[in-house]
Length: 133
Image 1 (cartoon, helix red, strand yellow):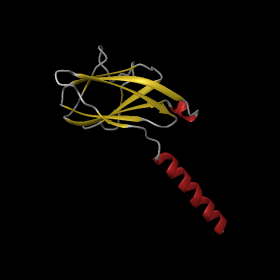
Image 2 (cartoon, one colour):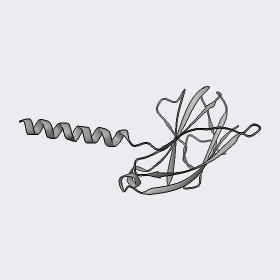
Image 3 (cartoon, helix red, strand yellow):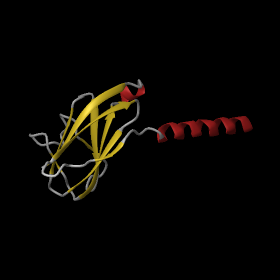
Image 4 (cartoon, one colour):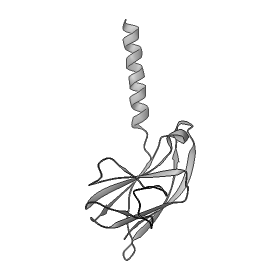
């Protein structure tokens, strides 16, 4: 009986610690004075993801361009119930590839891999351009 309890405890501990480390860089996006875009580079591996944090106003238009099309981009923030897929062919984007921000506040953009690639522990380099109009 004690062995089962100990095994369950070890399993749960391993599960919790492995998912708690599934994060990469946290970057505060800075726009140079007079510019409305910023460029960054990164590498993601396995279940890691990089988070880009920025502030924007309601009604502003966001464009996210990623050099590696096999990397996904997901947006979290005010007025978004769960998350928004910002990949190239997302239905959330208008005909010009822009997403209209629903509220003013702090947004977080995550760059991550597909679940299938994360399971295979693949490594992907990417360049991301974040533009707010």
